[in-house]
View 1 (tube, rainbow, N blue to C red):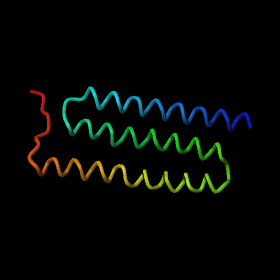
View 2 (view 1 turned 90 degrees about the vertical axis):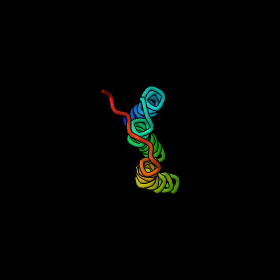
View 3 (view 1 turned 60 degrees about the vertical axis):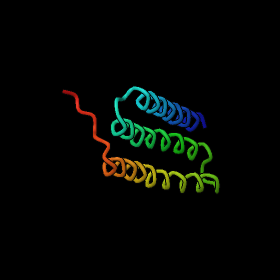
Amino acid sequence: MMLINTGVVILVSVGIFFLFVGGVGALRLPDFFTRSHAIGVIDTLGSLLILGGLILHYGPSIAAAKLFFLLLFIFIANPTITHIFTRAALRAGLKPWTHI
């Protein structure tokens, strides 16, 4: 039981750290495309780690199965939505930031 609780604390803590880093990246990066990359990648990983910790906490139960399906949905939907937004911005004429 102690090992499972330690795993839960580690997964949730690392997930919160990644979500924090993604938030800082969204504030500090220079343009829409780099911000969306930070949010799309880092927030997906942070959410998956937190949900993985919760699944580990609940063990084999119906709540863990529901969390697993939520994890799958986020794993598929978040990168897809990020791609759709960045492609729409590019088609709308938003130019990527270039450092000269």
